[in-house]
Amino acid sequence: MYHLIIDYFQMNSGRFLTMLTDHFRISLCSLLAAVLIGVPAGFCCVRFHVLQKPVSTAFGILRIIPSLAILLLMLPVLGTGAVPAAIALILLAIPPILENTIAGLRDVPPFLLETAGGMGMTGRQVWMRVRFPLALPLILTGMKTAAVEIIASATLAARIGAGGMGDLIFTGIGLFRTDLLLIGGISVALMSFSAGIFFHLLEKIILKYKRF
Amino acid sequence: MAHAIEFQNVTKTFQGSLRNAVDHINFTAEEGEFITILGSSGCGKTTLLKMINRLYEPDTGKIILFGEDISSMNPVKLRRRIGYVIQQIGLFPHMTVGSNIAMVPNLLKWEKEKTDARVDQLLTMAGLAPEEYRNRYPAQLSGGQQQRVGLARALAADPKIMLLDEPFGAIDSITRARLQEELLTLHRGMKKTFLFVTHDIEEAFKLGTRVMIMNEGHILQFDTPEQIILHPADGFVSSLVESAREKERFWEKFK
Ligand SMILES: Nc1ncnc2c1ncn2[C@@H]1O[C@H](COP(=O)(O)OP(=O)(O)OP(=O)(O)O)[C@@H](O)[C@H]1O
Ligand SMILES: [Mg+2]
Image 1: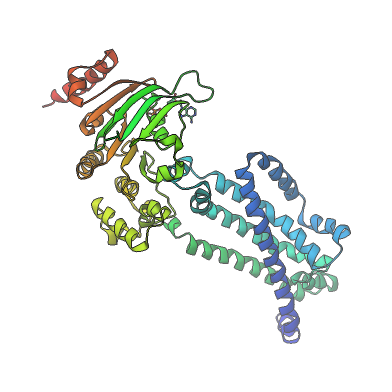
Image 2: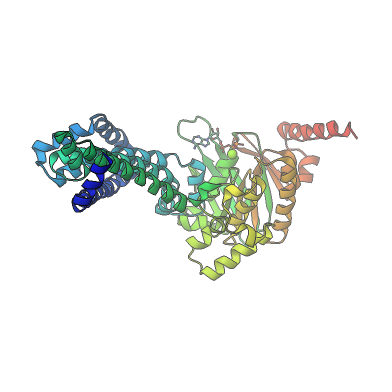
């Protein structure tokens, strides 16, 4: 087995790197898009009360549907390739980001908001200088959850032709090649793990005040 | 010379409430006075205070600061000219002590050197060595130190009026007594008008140049501590004074 894995890397390191970067790229793009949608949507839900129920219900339902199902449901609508896969991943990643943004913005203690207003901050300044910074820890947690989910689900995205580590895993399944399965599986696990570490470090750096 | 604060027939009713939280209130306060507002829970002290910086709007009547009707002023600008401290202090946990104190100067776009100098000056005044405390976070301070920073922050842009809503309510009695002394010293050194809400009668009489006694949205008496003790306006006030005397006698027994 060990030999097989060594052999694989000797002969296919270029191919491996392509799959790794494809996997990384689609995950990163999906995460960024999910943040760009999820955080403003969360803000709107807290700012305009009427929106909260319908929006969170919609994404709540989305959350129950398994990621593979979302991927396959995309097929007839958008066909195959990286774009429909990314859309499915984005849909998957929005709920944790949205929910955490809402919780973070909503749970800022009222007396802090009152002090902020009482000191003469404008409504906008209260959002930018108090509410968002105080919601940031929860928003980052949501992003971490989303990143881990995206990296795992991007494996399935290979099924609709998006490339990535999933290619290797599905090939391994098809050919009964345990070595390929191991390489693919461990790579995905390591990517997930690195994403977790990355967010952990990010929190440590930008949320200095949380240390005390 | 206009009064620092003038209330003209001010009434505030909250929606769904049958009673006026603040009921046809008239009073004036002069520059440099230290006014304590005393009354039991729910009598309208906080409501009265929050109408001054327009966190609440009165339903009827006028509030005039230094001759200017506040209803015609921009609320944001008004608030930047008034110091405001609450019981929960409300220091921003994600900002250092220095940034907390610099908040209003920054909102007013002061130059950085001026703001930094002001922060150090205020920290020193609050008895906190600037080099040591400037870059700490609020969570790294004791309750008493946090309240000192809260006061320093409210004083940062040198407001003429300070609104203090039970600032020492959650602080142990020894620290509280020390903070009271510090506040008195602070007030003596500047020509500011303080409005200080409390429901501790000793605190009210110790700090106030005049004491406003409220009940159910009304002002029962507004006078110097001596006058209130010598000539209580009605039964409620005399029972309040009596209850303080009672406490005094309790401690006398152990002398
Ligand atoms: N935001 C609000 N909405 C509705 N009713 C309110 C609101 N704020 C205060 N009230 C009511 O107005 C009355 C006066 O409240 P206020 O907070 O001014 O009392 P207080 O004297 O500050 O009491 P405490 O000593 O407990 O702080 C109370 O009956 C209270 O229930
Ligand atoms: Mg109150």
